[in-house]
Amino acid sequence: MFPDYWSQAAEELSRHDAPMAELVERYAGVSLASRGDAFGTLARSIVGQQISVKAADAVWGRFVVQVGEVTPARVLLFGESGLEGCGLSRRKIEYLSDLAAHFANGQLDPSTWGHLDDEAIIAELTAVRGIGRWTAEMFLIFNLLRPDVFPLDDIGLQRAVFERYFGGEKQPRRALAEFGERWRPWRSVATWHLWRSLDPVPVEY
Image (cartoon, rainbow, N blue to C red; front, side, top):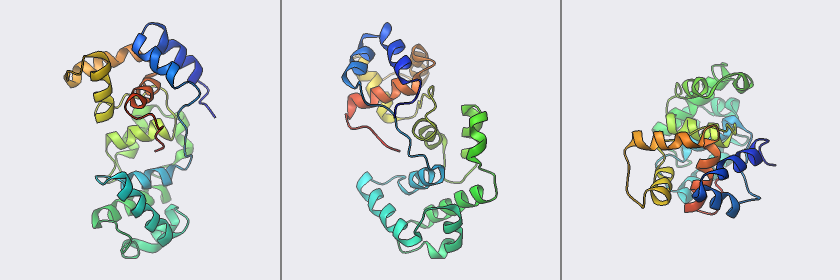
């Protein structure tokens, strides 16, 4: 199911931007899709930090077998010692436990996020150990389907912009930020299409 803004965003992004129009046409019929489960999405992002996708999938599989249903209560029930043995580093076990505690005590409450702007949600998420701004931005894009997130520190986004608009020449971070202003208020949609230019398989985060 497409986000309700997708068609409008695609049309407006295509209007005065030939490289983007080509991508929008090429990937018509595909869009962002949310996994829906906030805790599971964030837990999976922690498990996958600094390891390959293949390795992350293997560790996640063992983690799911270990805890059963992936919920804050289950993670807290097992405790840090109970999460050992499924391939998680000591630090990631601490991060997952901190994430579960934030959900359990109400410091992170997904029911309130519909009323908060992007920066307020980023501030809440980055208060959890192991979640930085990039992870929070990925969550806004892929879980909450926020339409105007521009993750400046994402290597794939940088590479795609430089290749399609700057002849492959790297640009300063400030220049990238300024360039991205052309895609407001649909920078998430622009970013998604730029990622597709590097990898046609849609990412699920």
